[in-house]
Length: 344
Image (cartoon, rainbow, N blue to C red; front, side, top):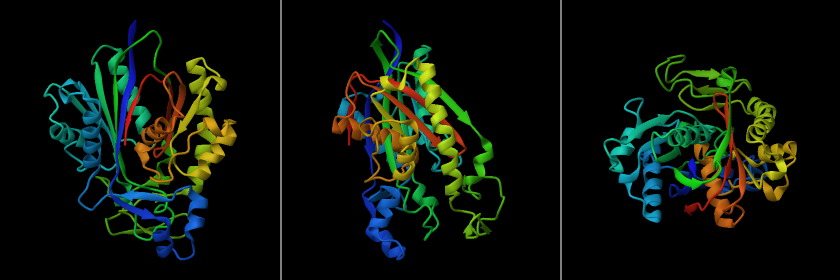
């Protein structure tokens, strides 16, 4: 047996408050609840309370994972926390979570400031650390609260995004072949302006209360999320098929060998377009965002949980994962599933 990393458990934590399509249709009278679902594939999304941070959602997901598996926090060698909505610019939120979970003092903690591709990026770091011999068990946490970044009444993003936390245990497993491999990555900073919060850190491109005019002619506050939907769509349809082909080549697999394709769950329209472009059968393609919406870094873990729960992902199956979005950034890999315990 060689030294390989595998995913052994996944959990999630969702805020209690729901924002339904009926409630959205009251905010946007020109859109019915049915039309919102038709455009997005989303029925409802969870919204974190004002005093609930991404670190809180991640911590609760981790607590659920420890409780369900019986794994001791003392056995975790490294903590990775993927978020774009940290509690503070400094200190890093991973240090705060480390303290709340009472992890060992010799357990490392690191923030990964990535969005929709962030889970795969974090997974690649965990796999590299384990297979290089540095550590044996890595707790990968993802959480985002994009609802706190959305301008009230912004119909371009409010129907899409929801808040969530996810915890994934990646650890040394007994295996004759790699469990997680074929990593492929990509970056194009030219797309940074198309998904951005201008006034959100140290660069004061606009003052906090400034407004700017977007490409559609709408005026927006610089302290909230701006997304150029058509540009994001074009980027995705161009880059994701190439990414998936690269993953297959690096894995020395063809598409017929993939049992399940799990992409970043952006919205149903985009996922349907990608499925057709990739020529993947519906039964092999995960669409799991009806009750959560686009949860940014959490979408792939949440989709995996639903696929395990529904039986569409079983031990011995081969899955292709791919995340893409803000940055622009994209990343993907192949997973050969062992026994993965899922907790909702």
